[in-house]
Image 1 (tube, one colour):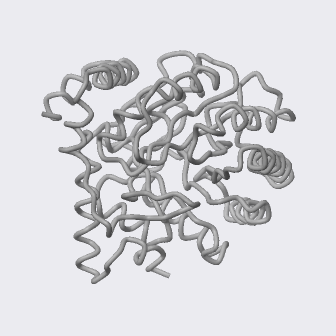
Image 2 (image 1 turned 180 degrees about the vertical axis):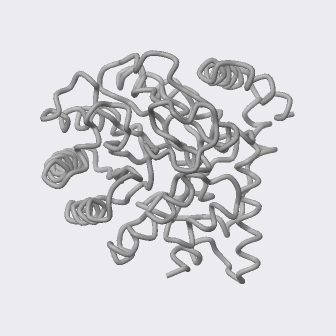
Length: 360
């Protein structure tokens, strides 16, 4: 049915289409039996796809990236679509409206999306309420944390600490997002001394919360694809020094190289097919710099099982999608996992974990 639904959605403004989709997922969650029926059709369970990372078990390596469930309100329905994990947010301490509309643009000729949303979300307190009201899926739920636009740069660490404090018991893992291009100067936090200061504060807060609760939550750092080689090396070394649990590579890009679509000149971050090669190369670089000691979640241009497998062979333990689901529909998760099993069989491997970094 998705070609029909896609035709309808693509006649709508992209943000209106997103809101329509979220509303229908909310309705699905409220009707008894709907999510169970979805799971029966969409969830593919095969032990060969299981990945263990950061003390968590992922029944398959394909997750949903942050940006779809901005308010942490439809992750149960998303889990029923077969994802191995779902990441909500980006969440900031205070609710904020984000940047002026229009701020979301399709690039169908390039299978890409440009967004300049600006961390629009209802804030961490609203998200905490949703977590207490909604059923918990049997997959890891990650929480992507950002800083408010109004927060001074020198106070950025306090925003990430607040998010961690308020939602610590709700998230299975947390992501420090300092790589979105749509919050002014946010990417400056990836630079040496600023990054060291920020991660020190975050990891100290994590240690305190661990002592309080007796529970440890993995912390991942999400990086931009536009870093130079020297900048990336510095980020990786700082992350390792601070004992970050892994890196998510990558966020959206400011590059417009090779685009043909009408909206290519819009400002904001580009995701989708055009990001595929750049993000895979960064995965290889991170693995090389860290000497394979820093787990990686690969994001950017994953549209099928071969794309996912390429990132895994480059060094990613897990992958995430978002833009591909807009173009190809929710069945893409099941399709990618089926194709991953075919890739394993072709290479004579018994587990997806055997493929991690196989191209070294």
